Image 1: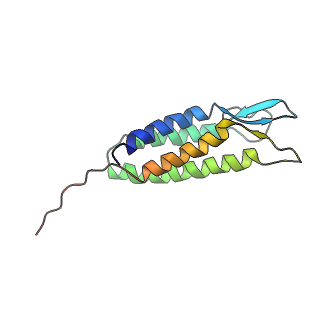
Image 2 (image 1 turned 90 degrees about the vertical axis):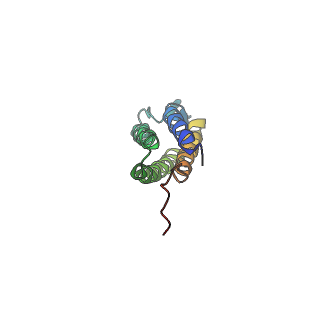
Image 3 (image 1 turned 30 degrees about the horizontal axis):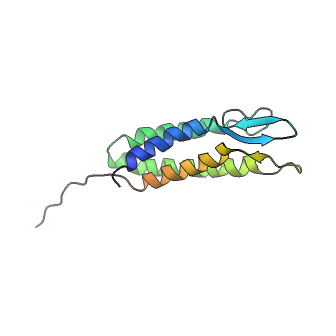
Length: 132
């Protein structure tokens, strides 16, 4: 695909921004949590790993070598599984209380899937093979 690298870089940068969008709102605590702020919960800061993986993907998208494209597939697979983990963990009901899902929790897995798709469609110019 002609624009797969550009789309992948834009999606990775947008994924970094999605870490700062609201992910969930817990009504009993009157708190809204993002990927970078999880307050008193024990979710950690899942946005740090997401931003790290997206930054590595941006770097690998911009390197025109075959090893970079293959490594980027692995990084994107880790990224999409991390996004799925965050979605399942942060939106699950605990002790009878279900959080309200906000826009960021849907945007992050979608962008991770776009990154994964773009890593599978690299623009690589292969050298012509000699005919015998």
